Length: 578
Image (tube, rainbow, N blue to C red; front, side):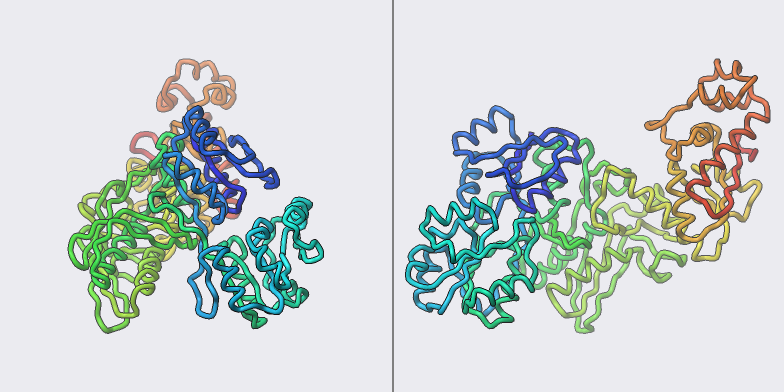
């Protein structure tokens, strides 16, 4: 079981991730003001003492705590740390410290520095809970507090003895004030200085800083508390899921992972750091295309050479567990060059978005590697990517059909391998269709596998065929999106009877032969269906008219995802085209 502490934007992200598991988890907030929908989550409200939290975790068999609470919830962070259960901290993004801003270790230091540099009027944007911490200062100098517009804020201010006429309210609609709204608030208060806390981007920190800078105000910032170094830190939904999978392997039904492109990027960064900083790290963080940072374990083999072992996700990918190595060599050209190492394929056909003759490193992994290099150095860099046993692994892929020979491709559009969709397989289908279009094909053959391809080519020897596996619907959608308006589909009878019944995904784990449906199709010959156990037996007992009906139904369902074009259906019996 998992316990999440939230009440923040990060708390919502944690809920989104945990709900994907379809299993119960606990979501705890201090109050009940945060509104969110929970399906499998169990809501808890109220503070917990250390003893209460320890007892709860023992009774509920909590194996992992996700701390998605506010950065300044110090008491909660300390209590969580003392419980002794693995903690994953869902961290916000914090801006780099800037010159010209007065940073303070805590509120005591903030008061001292404010007394040293008193302002005509201070606007404190540090939250209603900090009114009491700032009492010594606001008793002496004019101070406004910007607080949420709700009765609870007023009550807290009253208990602290703060003059209510000096409260500045802002809406509690869960929206962070814009830069313009922050400037208006500062101008209305007449302040010449602001005090805020380092609450991170999702806390609206940057808008406050930019507004104050544009107005020429003094800026005092209370730095965020330091959290335990023993926790696991993640920065978004992908990293959170991956961390939970490590601590509670049984929570998610299937395990996610990182693409070969993401792994290669981590290896490049580790290798480059070994050259630039003479360090041998065992973990590095890399930026995904959606700007989330994720941490991957790495091994520095020697100066300028590092490797990553691609972890085992539940995606049907032949590269699971393979070792990906990066070698970096700096130069003064200012350019980043990619070189094909052992086990990485070479591009021989157009259509992949990579020049013919280049190493098969796709566009997104190239961008990720270039980004990490440029974050560390402006110098030129020669990057050689290798994959152990890559040439052998490639024989179990579609690489030769898309024009990649001699090894595997370094791929990935998100950096993350999702196990809930057969993403790797579907993406490989799309790439093969793109190549066919790029080399001038105007019609394309679709078959479930090698036997189907051989049978279809007996009639159409020049036809370029793509293997759809079980993904009939997804393959037709991709072909239509790319521009094809005619497909010739060869389909074995076992898949055809499922497709005829309206199943565009024909995997046996999802759908079986429906004998009741087949009896309706057979009409007067329905009694012949009764003794059939395997679809191929239909060839022996059913008349030609039955198979014509199956073809018509298959075509009907295919047209739902291939609306503007022609789908020509051929039923395949053994090695013959019917």
